[in-house]
Image (cartoon, rainbow, N blue to C red; front, side, top):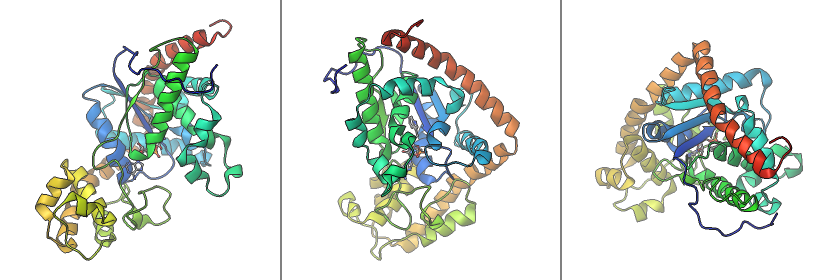
Length: 348
Ligand code: TYM
């Protein structure tokens, strides 16, 4: 075993393309999750073989009420379907129902280096001042994420910008595994799919903070379950500056709150920020906010409504999740069997 990630050319992997991504069932989903992840999942399922899971093993890296966790998992599954994922096209499953993820994660913990994990900024943010009180799982979280991705030999991973570093770690683990176990091209070097104006949605109260489940202010985010009044009210109250919208992206980039709202408008309407500015440059927020509120209600209110409908039939959601888990295991189990052989385990 070597201690450094070897510098090897990418692309020795020649297998098929596959998309994989997931969302944690650890709180209400918001507009950032929707634009940064869910919308992309729904689009990609028409283009590539797509695996989308509910990251319940990741969720328990911080405390989750046992009595609520299964329902939280169903809620994410309902959000996937409401956002347009089709179980006939995409494989949708709970992570904990495919135990091979955890098995591969252990092997990857013996491939990844402490120094690599020490650099992970998300752990630093989440553990805060009390690192020693964090779960060990929170620290090794990105190694499990690498296992989620590589167990399906996924080549494309649609995520928000905050996941970029975890994807880099995944690539390092894939490369080191292939090198150490003399299996060039065994795991692919997955590409993150991050681009687009929805990749980093910021708080509606502070343009320098990410929109997040853990922000104490509910006015900082639009939840996928918010009704039309709540969505419009939050946009009306969103923090802005007194200037009209600028002509250029350069000027926009210096105004965090304005940039965020234009980005949200662009992502929801499937346009670029430049195209939105072409329509609204010189206009004040008195004109822009009502247009954004109308667009957000038009796009998001039906998603929340669909979610509520789907959640009223838990049996159907459970059937979809169980069938997805079975399909996922058909791909995951052979990968782990091959990995065990490469590692040299008895009986493999
Ligand atoms: P989670 O549940 O924190 O976030 C789910 C997805 O939402 C994106 N996201 C955002 N996108 C834009 N703006 C925001 N403000 C915003 N907030 C969140 C996240 O980038 C993510 O794509 N570690 C993952 C879960 C995971 C995973 C994986 C993802 C576990 N294993 C394997 C991909 C592949 C996470 O943090 O999810």
